[in-house]
Length: 184
Length: 90
Image 1 (tube, rainbow over the protein chains, first blue to last red):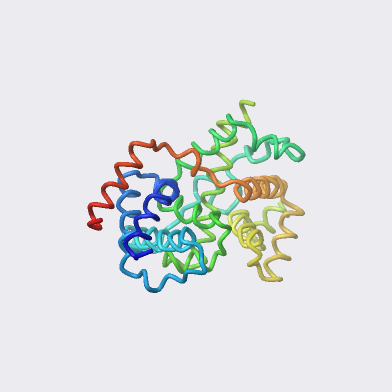
Image 2 (cartoon, chains in turn red, yellow):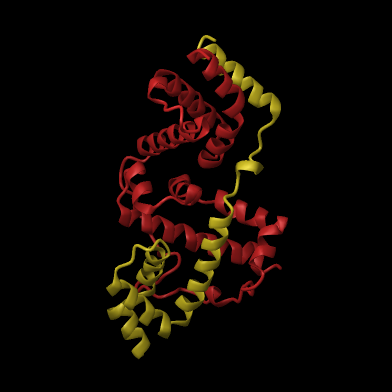
């Protein structure tokens, strides 16, 4: 197969998967389409560096991750400033007791994962996070990446990545508390 | 009162919850790990939070949300492919 034929094949086969991943990471269809288009252009121009023994989709996903990281770095040039005063007082102690509510899920975690309403609440809570925090969190969990790897890609310090994860998890916890656990 | 003092001088909850992230990712130092364990022993809020962190972490690890639920239809995907074909002049 010629280079053009291979690329054509890849566009046919992998556009959907790449688009879905890009839309998930960026929460923006237009932005996602632009980036996936760039992925194919980059794949076309660096085709010679593709090693036939690796899977095309794996290679394309790596390019996509790099493009998303570029996008993030360009958009958020300065290190993030993460405030926790919504949750903690000036001594660093919890402001309220809602964290003590019993979720009662120790043995039912898999049931939760199968519960469509719970998944919807969780998804909504994730989408409510600001992009600046959401993108690193999604990249961290996607393919279970390691923190130094993600912070290097996004050009933020590892300390700030911990803070972002801490802040997003606190918000997710609170959001689920309000929208799921207190109702179910 | 003693608890308050320990919280402020030893490790505040705002810091303990950060160390939980490091512990989750196995990037915590032995000293931090010890500090966190001591904190969680005396702090019921952080103990409760830690259990929830573990639940959230395990849920997010098992399932990453979105890919199959992303709202995009066949026509949009086809449009996109056509656009890329034109762009690459295929």
